[in-house]
Amino acid sequence: MFYSTAEFGYKPSVYRRVVRIVASLFIFIFRLNKNSLMATEINQMLDQWTSVQFQNFNLRFKSGHGRLRWRAMTLNTEEPLMVDWLSTFGKSDIFLDIGANVGTYSVPAAILAKRVYSVELDPANCYLLKENIIENKVNDKVILFPFPASDRVEMLEIYYRDRGLGDALQSVGRPQVLQTLNPDPYVLKQLCFPLDHIFNLFGLEKPNKIKIDVDGNEEVVVNGAWGLISFANEVYVELNDDDFGRQFKARLFAVGFKLDSEQSLQRGFTNCLFKRLNAAPR
Image (tube, rainbow, N blue to C red):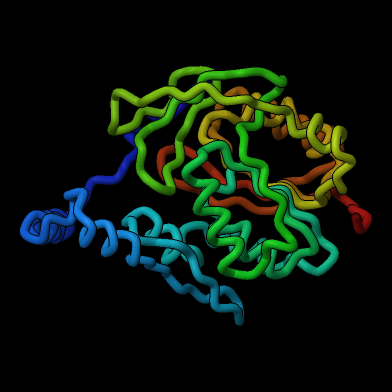
């Protein structure tokens, strides 16, 4: 497979570095990293949320971390094609969000749709996803799948980029193929499941809309969910211009999809929205 050689990661600005220095001095002076009763109570009472508008809805996302704040504040601007697509969801739609992260798109989808399945492999992100689901009162609509999607039921090593909240770019069953700023990721063994297997095992209602954003793990995810994908009416996926990307498009075209729209991203990736030709409501 071909992947961009550009590094993935965040490099703080000079202003952000100065703010971090000031914050570090504040923490040092007031001994907030010490295991004291006062420090514990202060840390426990901190409960930061970021509010963002989606259509006429005010959504709230757990923050208290730079990456989490950024994810919430860029909901409407980071992937405009995704936001436009979400805005078309209706009360009969069932959405499968593969690579849900902290729920940036699962939550607004649940506001509009009948049901959302949120698939997220990072246990830390699953905690935040749960918090965001509950805070926005959509817990009756969302089913959380807290495991990596793969093409087999097996125990695999998951390679993580860092321990930060809201992180992405994890790799399933192999070292990360995308170049990151952190050259020494840590590894955690986790149970992995094909999504087709899970839906069949529990008799779940199949989604008519699917999002796939899995940072280089597309092949194993798609192979384990092809039954669901070929059933859906609309598929939104982040693809690279490589052999798998071209093969996946050909597979979709072969079962009646067309490329409806796309958005170019940095580092050679493209968000693509595929819709089934002459799709019947599902």
